[in-house]
Image 1: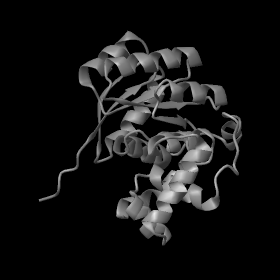
Image 2: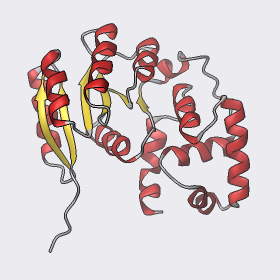
Image 3: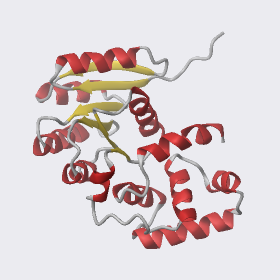
Image 4: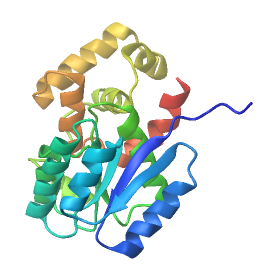
Length: 226
């Protein structure tokens, strides 16, 4: 008997019906994803999310930053258990920062590939508290005093592996170092990033552009096999 796969219950919110139906059709062929609702912006979206309480909400933000932030906050109140992934054509540092601050778990451009969107969806569903950002390098450099040299090469490697959900023991095995060394690199990274926890460090590293969706995509297979 084939082993059952737990479905990621997803709602798609987008006023552009053609794009929305394309996303729904794309998700429908994935064994671990089920679309439990779709609609446009407004009260209909809030009511739908409140009723079905999906794992993931794919939210279009093309109608403007302030409206997207307000909608995101309303959805979070309607269903605190749902994680919102913003899908947009806007590649703007201020909008990315505002939506992440408002509670978005991921920010993905509509120019992203099918594989990038699916990796983001699965990672957000699996990794509590992690944030995934898929934007241009220019936008990352414009966010919150970007500094690509803030962390050492090894500290960055450790944070990337933390971001894909690895435990200290797994990171030590992956990088051929001791768990004590992993903890030391994490402590140094916390200090440099001004973070007090793994989740806070990952969020800050992503917001500064130190960790990107490409890094997470490249390490997804390693994390799954560890």
